[in-house]
Amino acid sequence: MSPFFNKKKAINDYFKDIVVTKRYSIMLQSDYQREKIVILKHPFENRLTLKLIVGLGGDWIKERNTDIYHKIPDGYCWVEDYKNVDDSNLWGPVK
Image 1 (cartoon, rainbow, N blue to C red):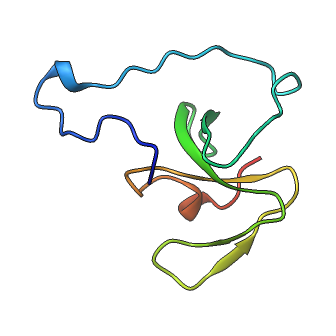
Image 2: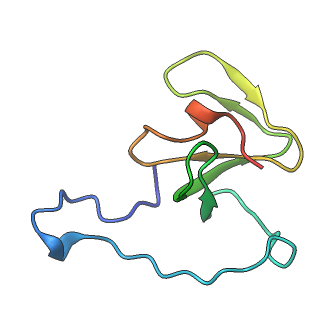
């Protein structure tokens, strides 16, 4: 997946990635685009998570490692993680 953050294994604390964000209301910031990195509330846990948008409403997305396709509903997006573990391939589209 591209873009990605530091792809080197963390040998020590000098290789960790730091993300600084500015929080906007969803009403003010609704210009979501493919290949943009977003911070969103995890759908099943009480925490924030960092993901890459790979599909928007109306797109057809192929689920990773399967032959299953999903049509993304309007108002939703498909997000993926560069580690390929905890993303829309597990959750489905997110609002």
